[in-house]
Every structure is written in structure tokens, then in C-alpha cells.
Image 1 (cartoon, one colour):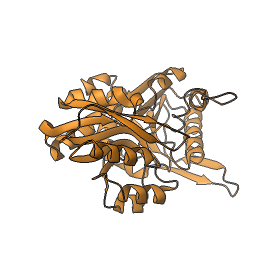
Image 2: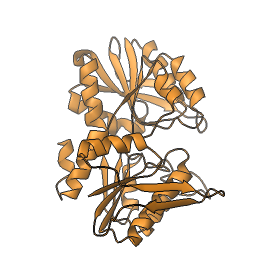
Image 3: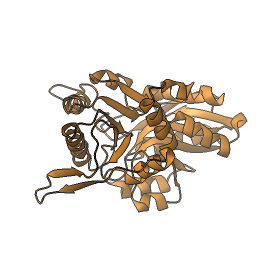
Length: 313
């Protein structure tokens, strides 16, 4: 087994390598003056089972291209099997047509990864489950829920806890975590007047006197979470925090960080699927938890032809 990483999230890749007690494969990823990506793999990978760890986060197009070029280099170096490990699958929010003459970019990206002759994809908390069907190769979609569950148990009293979905679309995710924790759920019913803005309309569920934990897959501007926290507190919630799988904060994150720091959220916990700038990690209300052991264990199981789904039983 070989582990290879691009430049998207080297901290996470190293943490996965440490969990597996396997060194990262020596490689050079660089850019030509016109920003073309060039990859050189400095180890023999012939006949090897290779896992390429690369999220397509900001800058999304550059990191996606790095992944594709790494896969092509491995293919031409006669690797036996190539698995694209994408802790964060970019373009996942473009999973359907939202109007006339608009793309389904998630399908396009899936086609590109498949066309590069990837044998398998390992990702985490896809924005929409149907994206698995966009690929013509096997896809393992991991859930950050076990890692989030463990952290919540360490930090909150479950008797007063309520898991909250910030919108109707996230109910399945919230219910999955609530069932693992043995607590109730509530739903924030909101109307979005235009892309990137959210207006909270109503709270479904009795949150009076409860410690509310908002759960979602992606945070970028932070507007939805801040509005939801304000609405929950108005309905009598004692405290509101949030757990998010993917912190899409590198682009324009200073505004998002300032908004969240000034909000009614007690804290925002994100996983390390996306490498965050130092100013995000230094913010008072931000805290990061690692999914490296979960991804590492999934890689180990794939390499050994064991069940991945049993990780969530």
C-alpha cells in the first residue's frame, strides 16, 4: 500500500499516514509559470495499491487538477489500483439543475475522475447522497458522525441535548446523529431569498431550556448558522453550538470568521477535511477535530478487502 498526497491538505495526509504507520510516498507537485500542474513520483509504485489523498477545496480547480494529474502519473507508472481519497468533494453543491441552462457540475467532476482511470473513490459526507451514483466506479462515502458523536459526549450533557438541522434538507444527517446520541431533534425552517442568504422563519420542535447543537455538512459564509442560532435562542434555547463536516472558509473566510465570532454561537467545531488558514484556527469560537483515524481505518479496510460500512454499525 502507498499513500500519496497533493498540496490540498498535507496536515491531514500526514495524520492519516501516522495512523497507518505508513510513510507518504515521495513526490513533487509543482506549477509551471502559466500555473500548469506537474507531478513527479519519486518512488516505484508498480503493482501497488495507491491511495491519493486530496480534497478539492480552495483553490478548488487547482487542487482538482492536481488530483487528476497524480492519478494519471500513477496510471502510467503501472500502479495496480488507484483510490482517490477526497475528504471533501468539491462541486458537490452543484448536484442538480437549479434553473434553465445551468450545469450539473458534480456529475462533470465525477466523469473527469472516472475518465482519469481511478479505480475507487473514498470521500466523506457528500453534500447529496445521489452523487455516489454519478460515478461509474465504487464510491465509499464516510460519515463524520462517529467523530462528532465522541466529541459531543465529551463536552455536553446528553440529558439536555437537542440536535438541530439548520434546514429541512439536513434532517437525515441530524436524525442519524441524534439516534446515535439517544436524543431528540429539531428543525430550522428557513426561506432563502437569494443564493448565499438565509432567513430563518420557524423552529420545528421544543427547544426551550435545551442545549442545541446545529449539525451540517458545509459552512462557508456562516450566515445560515448565525441566523439559526439567533432564532433558537429566541425560542428559549439555553445554548447553541454547531458541528460542521467541511469548513469551506479559505476563500473570504475573514468575513465569515468575524460574523461567527460576533454571533450567538458558543462555538463552531469543524473537522480537518479541509486545511484551514491559521487565522481561522486561532479564532476564539472555532475548534477543529480530526477525522484522520476514521479515514485511515477506512483506507486500511479497503486495502485489506474488509467492510467499510461496519465502521458505522
